[in-house]
Image (cartoon, rainbow, N blue to C red):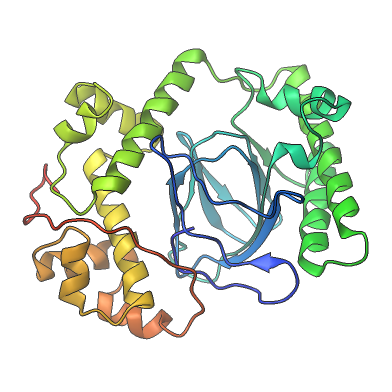
Length: 329
C-alpha cells in the first residue's frame, strides 16, 4: 500500500504493495498468487499510514503492539495489544499513523476462494454468510470472549504459517482461516450488526469520490468538483465525508497529498519544493506547514528520519495545482 513500511524480510512476509485502484477505488494489487491468494504483512505504523481503500479480499489486522487506529467505514477502532479486527470484503478501511511510540501490526489479505470456490460446500457454508447483503462490515476481536479468542489464535497461526512457510503451510493456513470464517459466520446467523441498503449505497458513492481524489490530487480540487463526480450536491458530499470518514473532503485531499509527498521524499532525490508542487502544493511554505500538521515533522526531518528504511513505493503522475485556499486545494 502506498506508504512507508518497515517489513520483515524473511519467509513469506511482504512489504505492502502500493494501492493501485480501478475507477471505483477498488484495490487492484494481487495479494499472494492465483494458486494461493493470501499475503501477510508485518508493519511498524510509526512512520506510515494506509489511505482509505477497499478490495474484494477479506483482511485481518492484529495488534502485536498497540494502540493502533483502524478506521472501518464510519467507525474508528483503537486496537490494544492482543486485539484484532476482521474486515469484510468490499468495505472501506484505513490505518492511521501512530502519533507516538511503536505500534506494530500483523495483517493478512486473502481472497475467499482460498477457503473454497463458489461451486464448493465451503463457499456455501463458510463464505456466503459473510457476503450476504447486510452482513457486518467488520468484527472486532478481543481475547476476553471465548469465540473471539479462538479466532485471534487462528488468525495469528495462519499469519505465522504464511510467514515461516513450513512444510504443508498452505494447508495449515487454509484450515485456520476456515475455522475463523466458521466462527464469524455463526455470528452473522445469530444476528450481528447489519449494514442497511442505504449505508451500502453511501459507501459505494464514497469509493468513487476517493478514487476521483486519487486521480486528480495534483490539480485544484474543490468540494464542488468532488461532489460532481457522483452527482451529489456540495452539502450532501460534505455530509457523506463527515458521516463515513469523520473528516471533510478537503481534509481528505490534504491527507492524501501529504501521503503521496511522503512517498516521494523516501523514494526519490527530488527537492522538497518540487515534491510539494507535484502533489498539488505550489507554495512550499504551505506544503511544509501542512506536512508538519499531519506528520508532526517537516518534510526535511521526515526524509532524514526514514530515508534508510526499505520502501515499497510508487507514484501517480499528475498536474500541478495553484495555491490552495480553504475550500479549494
